[in-house]
Length: 145
Image 1 (cartoon, one colour):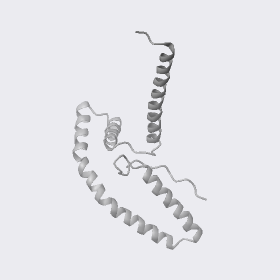
Image 2 (cartoon, one colour):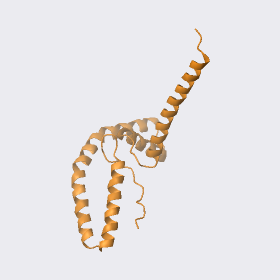
Image 3 (cartoon, one colour):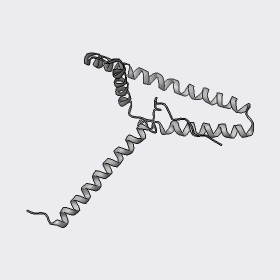
Image 4 (cartoon, one colour):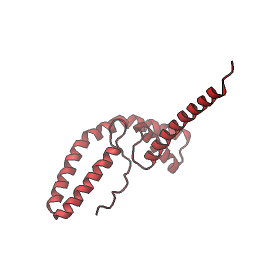
C-alpha cells in the first residue's frame, strides 16, 4: 500500500507542526525557568542542590547518593516548616510595609506601593506547580519613576 504524495506531504506538515509545538513549549519553559520567572518542581530543585554541591565538593558516587537520600529524608519536614512560617512572615512584611508608608511623602508612598506590587507579582510568577513560592532568587525590580 503506497501513500499518495499529497497524503505524505500532509503527514509531514502535521508532524512538523507537532514537533514545533513541543519544542516551542519546552523552549519557553526552559527560558522562563532560566530567567527565574517560574520555579522548577520541588524535586528538581532538590536535584539541582545535589548537583550544585557535587560541582563544589566533587562527591564520590557514594557520597552523592548519600547526600541525595539525606536531602530527600528531610524534605517533608522542611516543606511543613516553610508552610507554617509563611503566613506569619507575610503578616510581618505587611506590618513593616504599613509602618514604612507612614514615614514617606505621598510621592514616595506611590513609588513604594508600586515596588510592593511588583514584588507581589514577581512572587506569584515564581510559584511552582503546587502554588509554593520558589526559593530561587528573583531578579531585581525595575526602576520606578
